[in-house]
Image (cartoon, rainbow, N blue to C red):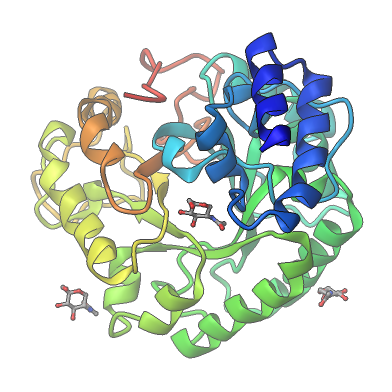
Length: 363
Ligand SMILES: *[C@@H]1O[C@H](CO)[C@@H](O)[C@H](O)[C@H]1NC(C)=O
Ligand SMILES: *[C@@H]1O[C@H](CO)[C@@H](O)[C@H](O)[C@H]1NC(C)=O
Ligand SMILES: CC(=O)N[C@H]1CO[C@H](CO)[C@@H](O)[C@@H]1O
């Protein structure tokens, strides 16, 4: 009790980053000794009404002078991570460390992002260390990705082992890596039978348990549904990372009419996802069609106003997304630039914004 009131005094006095780090370090042994003390950062922050700078990667975060021993008191309450959380960012170009720094700074500072969700693959040695470096420097959490690809090969196994090893080797990795995804759309693409995918998730969770890094699969509702629900995968994953791409619905028309389509897919996860935290991590509407981006409805419209309109729709439904089970739905914009996935970028291929984009980060 004495300790709690001391902490409260510190809070009232205004926590500097150094005090914040002392607090992080002080609380851990303390909570093990006192039965009624809150047992995690979320509960602690709530009980003391601590300000945002204490949790990563809140918009007010300032880095502590020293890092805690582990990430158990590190992350923001998932219930604060609804609305716009950041961008999908394709890494198949194997961006230089310098370019990652520049674009991650833009992602954070221009758009108030809290996360980047990696997409695609880069097999350059040390690439994930560059991601960690740029993410840490710009206060971005990372949804990392083991990329299966579409060629049916086993290269994902070496990618998995490389990434797991990097997560263990880089001491900052566990402070920026919010979740490890298997993706993209391994069920829809049928790269592994669902029971084997569930097993891979369990193995990765075991591998990362000492680091406190959760594991998920990046997938469409339809990917689960066409595999009989793949309940074993849904049960294995820690958070639900959803591909929300209503342009491909057989009922698609313009993006301002897409909310019922969003709800339809979301309802599957509400019904069968055991209340886990949910993200729309591959989430957007294309501005052009191409051989690989073809609608399944004759009325579906792909153009810049409809790409923009989809994000306007999500902003209009901020309160609805906030109240979804699991702490609300956080959404990523897919994707940062047309250079990454043509037609889906917020920026065009010359680096100009295609439409005004300043989505809500809370409501
Ligand atoms: C943290 O505490 C809150 C409130 O008691 C609880 O809902 C949540 O599940 C806990 N999270 C973890 C990771 O233990
Ligand atoms: C995790 O996996 C990597 C890559 O396969 C391996 O090098 C490492 O020893 C594993 N660690 C644990 C704790 O299982
Ligand atoms: C595979 C599947 O759809 N499983 C269940 C998901 O939730 C709905 C609604 O509760 C059930 O009807 C499904 O059987």
